[in-house]
Length: 178
Image 1 (tube, rainbow, N blue to C red):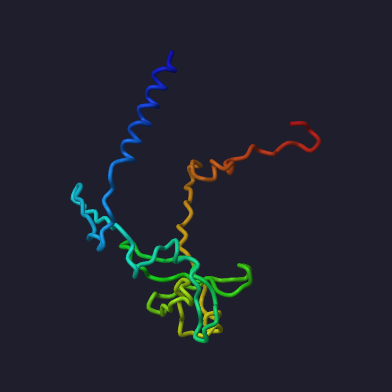
Image 2 (tube, rainbow, N blue to C red):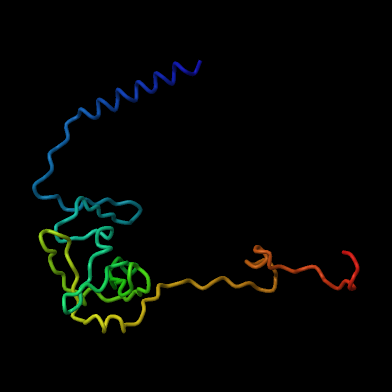
């Protein structure tokens, strides 16, 4: 009984999607329009329509090769540190080690790097003015870790949820059954 209305709805949806697919799409603009803006609840939202040639996506930037002053590869970008306003504070670089074993992470301000074009159209490379030994001697980068919650004497904290509450007394005489 429900079969006919469901089939009708499915056919209607297919016809509507086919009609939308046939509607003309405007050709891409030669010069992208500036970001569109919207206002809602006192907060202005700026939409960016396309990536520009001088911009990077974080998903593509992670893994970028980092070279030392002697043009020897010393590591790759493993993360990006930015503040609450979106300003990039540092590139986190994984250095040393072999196949990820024994490596460490150091963070350097973006101004520490020189962007070098990749060879034969490959991805750009970041170059430092430091030598490999200087990088290996740098202090490890430590990501922020929020403090663990503590409990008060009420017994309703994290420990009681994990079975760390009070235990029954074990004051039974030796050899007696519980």
